[in-house]
Image (cartoon, rainbow, N blue to C red; front, top):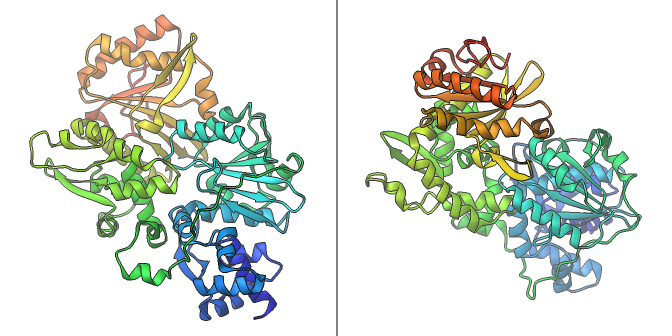
Length: 546
């Protein structure tokens, strides 16, 4: 075996599921040489590969060492096969763990490639139970933890991980990856008083950025740094966590054996295509969504939605029920587990909140049997749930036709905002939060769809949380640009009554809220971006997002 082949075999063991470009970045060999020799190792049966793609990672092939490769590596290192299984993340258990997190593994490897352009050679340690997802060791002895905030992970779980990070080994620094700007700002508040140096970036930026790209922000201050600049602020030589190896490590089985049987859960992240993963995320965010609403949110034709959902159903990842004469989608328990494991969230908690099983659509009040507390509530109030879905779908369609984009939409459990007002913890609990990207600027908004707020007292109670929220500095801190508040009413008469209540409450609190309100009939006629809205100052406006 040539020297390059020995080096690559060891690299594949140290960096399982890295692709050719990433392995070339971590090695001292050229990309062309790595491409050629990895092909030779695969033909020899020492490594195997599998395809992977996600919304953030272009289609590529990722490499794993085989049982024969482990035996050959042990011979090369002058050690036993058991020692290789103990010292490298190559056992069957490690393989399944990393494959379940494959999308995040790919992003962290891309981050490592940028890091390797500045500091090389790198060492990497993956974690199963530690607060960070992984940690890099730099050649000068400094250590760098990487903590990823997954799309479905809630704020409490991430806060606990950050608290545990403070109590663990002393890293030289921490890199935090977040899915959107709102959670980036929240992470900055969580880390503002952290006893270690940390930098935060959007995950989509870290997936493609070079070491010179200015994407990293500190918990305080307005400076945006490149990775190369951030490294200069790291502490001195640091520690990193060491997890106890399992008592018994099993040699990995060939991937072909897993393909022959029913597709195991841990192999699905490599089997699903980016469009299928995006569909899965959207259905997870908006249970009981109709096919036409899902098509609008995805920006595809109905036929394409049928194709995507049929593929997900074949994998037993979603359920398809006909309720009130219309098809509606929700994630199966297997789909919930797939997303939870990807984001290092609790599978049991996800099923307790969102399980759509068992459901009998024909039974009266069939929603009563659902295990998931939140899916049960959404199905119980299906008219309201469908109205919110329809509004967002119409907004996505109309924005697309204007050359704009609905850059972000968050369901109620992620749209809520918690803040302190007069020494008490308060919150706003909208039906949705979104960010509309129009003419090069981002305009955030909250959505409240009202069916029951028809009395003045009820309307005043709905307004009160927003009056408190906008009476603090938090709207700017949370979003940069204060969000619009959109109140949509089923009944035009209720919208007329809301105008009086809004004027009275605004005068009483002396707060001028960026509130726009309309009714279903006007919204269906003009669309969410049309002249369907009113404010407390004037009876009609042209467009709230203009």
